[in-house]
Amino acid sequence: MSRRDSMSSSVQEPPLDFSFRSIHVLQDLVTEEPRIGQRPLKYSKSGKSLTQSLWLNNNVITDLRDFNQVLTTFFNLSVLYLHGNSIQRLGEVNKLAVLPRLRSLTLHGNPIEEEKGYRQYVLCTLPRVTTFDFSGVTKADRTTAEVWKRMNIKPKKARIKQDTL
Image 1: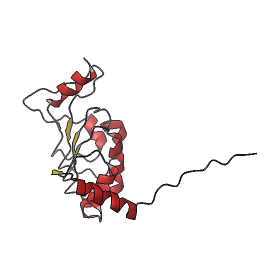
Image 2: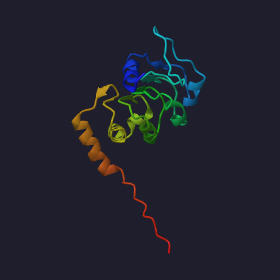
Image 3: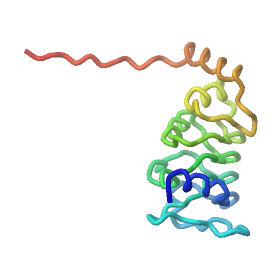
């Protein structure tokens, strides 16, 4: 199966639905079974899920610890629902940057929603997201996020290698 066939066939795959499961940490996904839908879930030869959507909404997730170990196994992931959890630090959003195909994300209903610059921070951290909290991301949103970033996020200083004599 070519890469294109793999991607187009996964578009129709049902979501992995772990919503309303009282999940505390992402490591629980290893032992928890997703809600069964009308269509069976499909997996690659290596055992990775072909789904593009992962629903983790309405649980009690407080942070994205172990994110790289668990969620990067969903290599086609483009939709991630995390709304209605207990994520408290905006910095947790940085961990989502490892998902190159992520286009739709929900985080509303988490304590981070109350943080100043919440939407701008998420959009400048995840520039490929086109739908955030069930709202389309506009050019104005992108511009506002870039201005917010320049005013609020200090650029990382480049390390200058010292030549030793």
